[in-house]
Amino acid sequence: MDKILSGIKPTGKLTLGNYIGAIKNFSKIQYEGETFLFIADLHALTLPIDPVELSNNSRDICAYYLAAGLDPKHTTIFLQSTVCEHSEMAIILQNYLYMGELSRMTQFKDKSQKMDQNAIGLGLFAYPVLMAGDIVLYDAKRVPVGEDQGQHVEITRDLVKRFNHRYGDVLVMPKAEMVKVGARIMSLSDPTKKMSKSDPKGDIFLSDDLAVMRKKIMSAVTDTGHEVKYDVENKPGISNLMTIYGALKNKSFDEIEKEFEGKGYGDFKRAVADAVVEEMEPFKARYNEVIASGLVDQVLQEGAIRAKAVASKTLERVKRAVGLYNINK
Ligand code: AMP
Ligand code: TRP
Image (cartoon, rainbow, N blue to C red; front, side, top):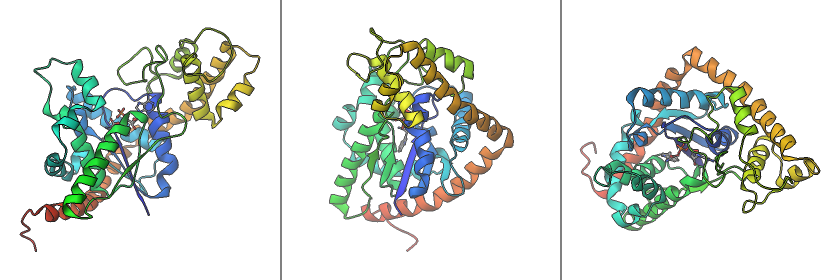
């Protein structure tokens, strides 16, 4: 059975983009393999974050995973920081990724450009090293992520190739996997920008009330004209709403265009809002139940034990391969 692995970083509030591009898909594919899903809390430290917010966000992501139908009996759900092999693996792997290639990563460039150039943490620069370690520790072949994380999986592939070339067939080659519709949900206030956790106006947060979600969709920026047609270039706003609608209703763009032929943007927006509310209402109710049940801590404790059992074996294999002296022969 193929190993499947992904993670979400507990910075900011989760968005509908995270739900469509990642979480919903995780629950759909979990039984296709041995699945590991974690909360990338060490990655969250690469930019300044309030400690209380970090730990609350971490708990919330676990609760959202469970609310989305991830089954902790099958899928190993854990916190990255509870499996120390992640940190140890990163220390080893940092020697096989180069400063030139790390400095060309889009995420690093985007985030570091906005910062005081004298106060960019080493962790932000080395982000892909930690992420490569996350992936190889579980021998993951499939890495389901949204579009923005594709480059990080690509650099992991480069690392695996380089490492195996030097030491033999030690690491498993991963591959990024993206949902067909919804790998990049755009902001509702500026549909040329990604919906990100840091844009309160254009984002639908999973924590928003249903009425707020509806309102945000009804006031989403649309384009000139009145035809519901998929055309990212000329109709980025409508195309983004079509993507949201298509992903939630499992409909193709052709089907959506036919459904709304002769109708205006208003009718279409109402249908998108209905679709979002229909999906989010039970999801949010389950989230509240999970939070109230105390299940989160139990799942994360069991997950840590299961994840560690797998990660420690891989780390051992890597240590032997590079020649770290083994005192437990
Ligand atoms: P992050 O919020 O950066 O930790 O991302 C968690 C997961 O959600 C990753 O797989 C991202 O690629 C995915 N994701 C984040 N934002 C979006 C978006 N706007 N549309 C689709 N997927 C997204
Ligand atoms: N970098 C990812 C994000 O921001 C989170 C992440 C960390 C991840 N390690 C991973 C995703 C390993 C997939 C596999 O979304």
